[in-house]
Image (cartoon, rainbow, N blue to C red; front, side):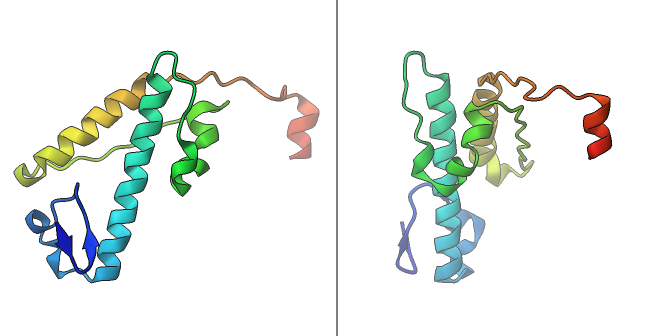
Length: 122
């Protein structure tokens, strides 16, 4: 679908009445959607058995989250869904992503032992 010189394949622009948005806003929404798609690809790669490459460098979002997704951290995603019937496809997609993200396992370890002196310094 082509709107305002911007092509979008995954968003349902007309069903969400987004045709009133400016070309700049549609470009921003498309960029956000691409970053979220890359995040989903990273989560899928982390779950794949034997796959070594995780495409963290494909978006700024996944580069920023690289340590959180595959590193020494505990990570939590908060996903939101809509009860509206027009959002059924997006809600299902979001829930599928959340299900995959829950299966990613990270192993956080304490980097520094906390003692009384450390707590007093801070």
